[in-house]
Amino acid sequence: MASFDMSAVAHGAAAPRTGVLRMLAARFRAWQTARRTAAALRALSPALLDDIGIEPGDIDGFADRMAGRGR
Image 1 (cartoon, helix red, strand yellow):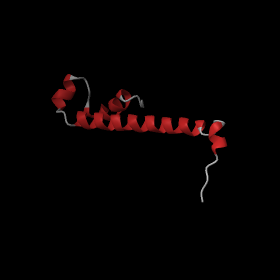
Image 2 (cartoon, rainbow, N blue to C red):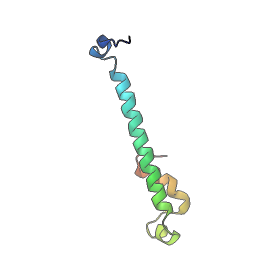
Image 3 (cartoon, rainbow, N blue to C red):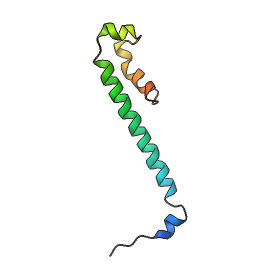
Image 4 (spheres, helix red, strand yellow):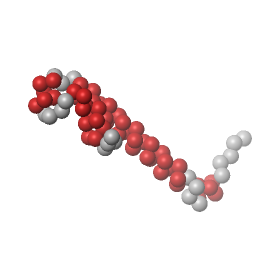
């Protein structure tokens, strides 16, 4: 039978893992946002991209910056 040692949780041993998981989740959400933003921008015509001041080669960097990932 498996057992779980509650004393480790009670003394905060799980806190560092929780911080890492939150950081990983935030990075994953930022990556998803950047990916969706880049896909939406790639769907625009070159004329529309020019109107908003983005060149086709700048889409990935722009999407990363907008998602808070920066490059």
